Image (cartoon, rainbow, N blue to C red; front, side, top):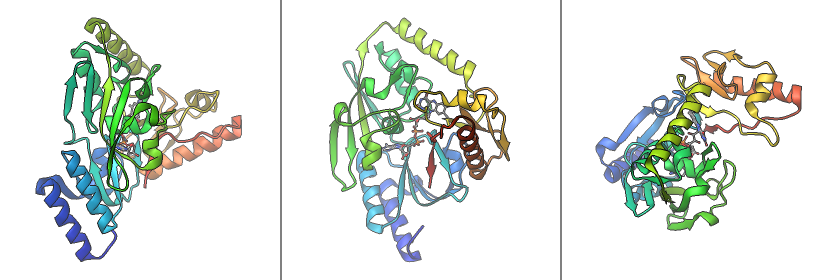
Length: 307
Ligand SMILES: Cc1cc2nc3c(=O)[nH]c(=O)nc-3n(C[C@H](O)[C@H](O)[C@H](O)COP(=O)(O)OP(=O)(O)OC[C@H]3O[C@@H](n4cnc5c(N)ncnc54)[C@H](O)[C@@H]3O)c2cc1C
C-alpha cells in the first residue's frame, strides 16, 4: 500500500471501525477471489455489508489517497501475480440482500446473477433466465451489461442506485446508463453500483425452469466449465466470432506454462493448473498477434486486467 507505515496503520484501523475487525484481511490472496484462480495478494481486503459501509470505505480510501478496487465475483478479471497495492472492496461476500415488490426484484450489488435468476424462477417471474449460467454478481453484470443467449442486463434492468466518485448517491434509470455491448456509464464514470432493480414479468414457472435448464445444458456442452477461466477472453469483433477466428488460426490448445486456449471452446483461455497471470498474458498476446497476422483482425480482451 502506498503511504508511510503510520498512514497505512491509520487506514486499516479506520476500515476495521467501518466494517468490523473480522471483515478486513491483510495480504489476502486474490487467487481465492477470482474464477481464474490467479492473482497475488491484496494489501487489504474489505467486506462491507451495507451501502453506508461501502460509502464509508470508499471515503476512507480516498481521504488516505490509497487506491481501491470494487470486486464482484472476479469472473471477468485477470489479477496480476504481484497482486494489488491498495484496498479491494469485496462485495460478493456480504453485500447480498434481496428485496421483492410485486414483479420487481432489488438486489444489493454482491448478489450473484445465478441466485437472482434462481429466485426469479421460484417466484414465477420471467426475464432473468439468460443470466442463470453467468457466474458474476449483479454489480459486475451491470458494469459490463452482461448478456448471453439473446438476453442482457439492459433488457430487464429498471434502475441502479450508485455511489458517485464525489461520494454522493444517485438513482439512475436504465435509459440513462448508456448500456451497450460490454459497456456502460458505470464503467466510464467510475460509479459503484450499490443496488439494482429488475423489472420482470409474471411467467409460467415450468416454462422458466425449462428455459434455464436448456441454457445450462447448452453452456455445459460447449464451454470448458470444469477448468478455471474468466469466460470469453475476447470481445466479439464486428462481423466475426472470436472463437472461430482463433480456431481457424490453428490456436486451439496453444499453451504457455499453465495457461492454454481451451480445446473445448477456442474463445476461452483456461487455467490448466498453476497458471500465472504472466502465462495468461502471453497466451492472449500470441493469440492477438497470430489472428491479426492471418486475418487482419485485432482481438480486444473482454477480460479486465488488474492492475
Ligand atoms: C465460465 C464463465 C462464463 C461466463 N459467461 C458469460 C456470459 O455468458 N456473458 C457475460 O456477459 N459474461 C460472462 N462471463 C464473464 C463474467 O461472469 C461477467 O462479465 C460478469 O458480469 C462479471 O461479474 P463479476 O461480479 O464477476 O465482476 P468482476 O470480475 O468482479 O469485476 C468486473 C468489473 O466490474 C466491476 N464491478 C464489479 N462490481 C461492481 C460494482 N458493484 N460497481 C461498479 N463496478 C463493479 C469491477 O470493478 C471490474 O472492473 C463468464 C465468466 C465465466 C468464468
